[in-house]
Image 1 (cartoon, one colour):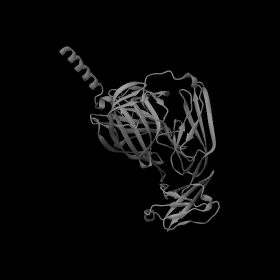
Image 2: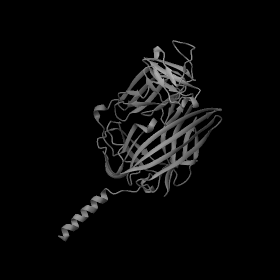
Image 3: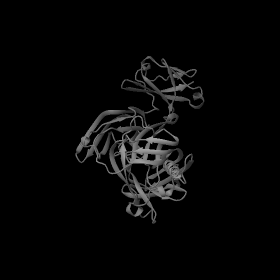
Image 4: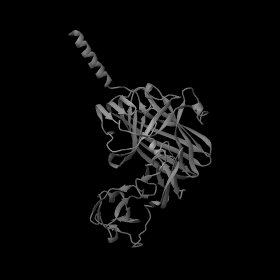
Length: 440
């Protein structure tokens, strides 16, 4: 009987140990010369990424790899910025091929990392402008994780850097990161099943590009859900995307740690396809392009016409799978996606696909020159707007939440205290109208 009890106790201990909480430390982070394979998968409905709490079981075994890549962490001596990040333990990773647009485009963007018993952080950035390597150490480092990392931990950090552009101006970024360890348990992907911590990261960043005294600013709000396991260097699974109003989240990418795989040979040849999050947008309002192309090991090239007023955001570029783009001038923009692999290439072209309007303009196609007023915080739309989609923006381009009843727009009473006027945008079929609305 004692022997049977001992076996039972051992099995219980093994089972409890296999699903025990884990702690993440610097030993679980990448080091110089690590080469880590991962797979990308499509964002599909029903993925349990919002599931949180203790002793959870996350099942992502249904994920299907669309393509694979390798994430190399190079010694600084193997990067274009070796002279600026000297040291035995200095290492970096290319995070983007390009950033910016036209003459104001950066190439070969690298993050440089540092890990210690207290944190794993981005300490510097390197990029090339007109072929010249430009480095910068963060004056406030971006702490990706703070150690030891355990369930229910919550931390925050600010980050900041500035790079001088010779003879032109400067490029800077400021922001903050909030990490919350909101679950523990086991996660299953096609790579296997692992004990893990689930970490949610909310990241806000504001990029400023000062060109000969002319400032351009771009804000980004992103959310990353990451499942971390001991000894795996990068997350077992990461789902990231854009933070939306009211605490919402729109996932755009799914990647997971993986082994080499032979992908479905049925879709070897590329077929280019894409859609977008919006067809009618204000100037500098971000637009996310969703790439639904099929094929294996695809390279992408996005072309916008006209090209000069196109800005790539969220570290995306014209070769990103799902770029985030804004436009600095009103007008209509055509979009072309070219998908290429070893077996050939394919293009999808959508002419005059995106309509960009200036939210501060005063134009009216049917009643030119008239400025509407809102009395008692209620605006009665003219007849030609009744069947249209109506939005209001403040002078900075920020959307104002409204309620529509019939052909009346109901506004919050506090708006009059903070705004002298708003900008009305109405979409009627393929036509876009804007109007300056005085608040009485």
